[in-house]
Length: 320
Image (cartoon, rainbow, N blue to C red):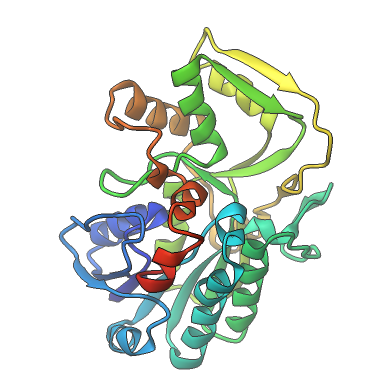
């Protein structure tokens, strides 16, 4: 099967491409290398921007299926320049929907639900509270009548592969790095919930559904975890860790829990990578100095994009 992975050089893309190669698919990566200096995997690579239809068109003609990972990800990153975020996260997907009629696997976010107290399934009302969530929800709408499966991902964690940039701006990874570096982590509030999912488990769902007939929206998460409980879980890996708590003066807009029961029932989806595994993966990276400069902004979406005058680099070079 010819599979085009748009945004395949990124955090999720690294795990996706590994699984595709294991399953003997013909893989092509289309990516703007926004956070990367090179793409080193033995895979056909096309450098390009998702806002460039003439560059995209021949890649889509080749592909039997598209895994669409390209996006500016995160509330802070997208807020830097909403116009660019809309163009990359939303308008490029509209163009895809209008010009491609084969299989599409699309990654969205559980952030579309906003802050709600109950456990949310796919029928729950949406309440996007950020540019990021608004653009992802709009992209979902463009794919409603396509041969598309849409995954609303929980907050990812862990290491996807040995080549791609690891993200250190995700809560499990962030707490692990701070625990190693400072021996102390601060938790604001702590009662906020996050639905968590290992990056490899997200990739697995994408690859396993390339050739299925399943369509529509599916939540993906392993478990819903309170931030304070996650902090104590990190301490299990750093016995001397000090945890400081500070009262939250306002409600965290990212406080939500989701259910993945639909994915369990429809295609037997059960994540296999635990939070403890993810903590150990990131711990091993920093303890062994495999990441020699953990302060490098490239590991944090918002910090990196902030260096380029609110997306000047993104607007002129790339989009993934």
